[in-house]
Image (cartoon, rainbow, N blue to C red; front, side, top):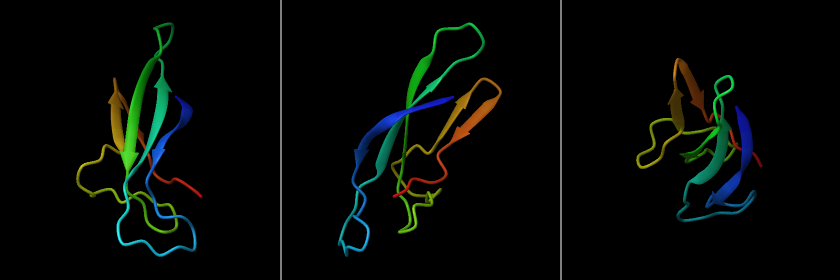
Length: 77
C-alpha cells in the first residue's frame, strides 16, 4: 500500500469557521505480490482534528483488496 497524493481537499482550513465543507480525497496504490499495481481513491469527511467520520454519507473511506482492508483513518493538517 502506497499513499500517492491528495486529489481534492474541501475541508475547512485550520482555525477557520466554515458553514459547509467537502470531503478530502486521496489516491492510494495497492499491489499484491508481482501483480501490476492498482490505483484507488479513498474519500472522507473529517473532524476538525483530522479524524475520519466513518459513517458520513457519500464517501468511501474503506477499500477491500483481496483479504485486506485499507482504511483512511486520519488526514492532517
